[in-house]
Length: 211
Image (cartoon, rainbow, N blue to C red):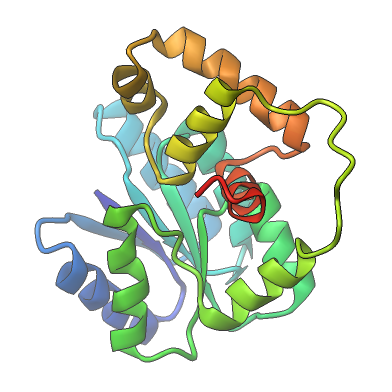
């Protein structure tokens, strides 16, 4: 199940086509504003439907897409939120990633380029436009040797799997432990890395060479 949060009809149409090209079996819903998107999310949850992927514009008539990303992280933690926007400055990029975005794509890219970035999701590749990836990597290229509370080998393995896009249940199944145990590992990982979202954990995993 996919959701497109975008207020321009034309952009909605071509984003919908991109999603259907990449994920032919996907059911795609659309919303033109923050309140409409929250209402749709409420109805989907009431119907027992899990949202798998959301493409979220940041500039909306009734607010910012960052607020919706936060709401998704709280209510649908396994849903991948991918920003689709014209904004490529640090303020927008890092606010979105801190809010829980799993990817950040620029509308200036062609339809084919966007499709290529989104198709990488099935292989656990975070969908990032090249300019955004360079910006993120530059930010984490500083020397941070002082890791007073290093991760255990098991925590590194859990980090590697969640960075590849595994759900907590899938990580638990892969490692042969309970979901509760994995949730505890993730809590420790977030504390040690000083992050608060899967996207930030993925960035740190890349920086640390875990993946």
